[in-house]
Image (cartoon, rainbow, N blue to C red):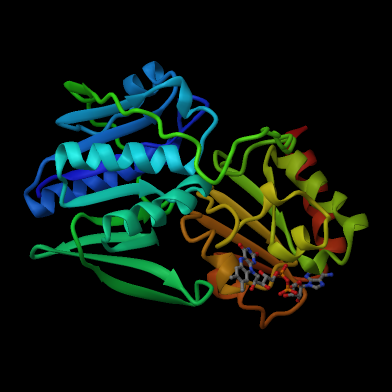
Length: 323
Ligand SMILES: Cc1cc2nc3c(=O)[nH]c(=O)nc-3n(C[C@H](O)[C@H](O)[C@H](O)COP(=O)(O)OP(=O)(O)OC[C@H]3O[C@@H](n4cnc5c(N)ncnc54)[C@H](O)[C@@H]3O)c2cc1C
């Protein structure tokens, strides 16, 4: 067994940005292990994704068939198993997504091998694969030596820079018969309407509100501040749990990990699960009534005060500066 195999992630035939991040993680490991780097894509209509999957792969394995849309876990794990049989890698990496959370553990069970999910650091120590992931709700970082053959890991998004290496010079198409429907039959697909406004993942500025806002009626303070700055709107988990905004706005361990230049946290206490989502933010400003709030340990700048007084004055000043 040799080689680091990176599975790209696609949605509706389009390569998702995290695929290029996993390629970067894979390239670092392949270098450290002195092994080749291989890529793989499973799905329908992969022509564009094939051109966009940069990683410097020596070979890119394609399993392409219209039967991979809609997604079913059984079909994906069957295809991945065939790719692994074809190239016998020593390490296999996947993006940590809703889909891989379903099918990759089953693949590991089929192959009777070791898997660690949601990794933020991957390192080769000698020939060992040592990975780090947040555990116990993100309060502690756990380090694991992955055993088995091949050793497998899923990689958290927004941790590694996207690869800009060349696309693969060799594309190997594998003809994998799609398995007959198993115990799960696809019936219908419902698309959740995307939340309006800027996407959190791409945003350079994010204004985020927490439980300290006190209720949905006060959410306009966050939206007005975001609009004044041309920023995306984020929030902490209780805000989503209380139904003030859709879950697509949630920042943190169980939400989105963000990478803005500026993150403004309003009425957010700074729980580790929230901080896990803003570790890559360049500058953090916190506005909180409680001067002892943990968010101030992460913030570059802090305002101790009531958001009802601070935000309108802040918005007014921005408008003055812009006019
Ligand atoms: C497995 C797991 C996963 C989790 N994932 C996430 C996640 O992804 N994202 C996330 O956010 N949380 C997550 N949580 C929840 C997390 O532990 C915290 O409960 C949550 O982040 C707290 O949200 P908050 O800061 O908005 O609320 P609180 O902790 O209640 O803080 C509210 C803050 O508002 C301040 N405040 C009150 N009134 C005002 C005012 N008028 N003006 C200014 N400030 C004011 C208070 O001083 C306080 O600091 C997770 C928890 C678990 C167990």
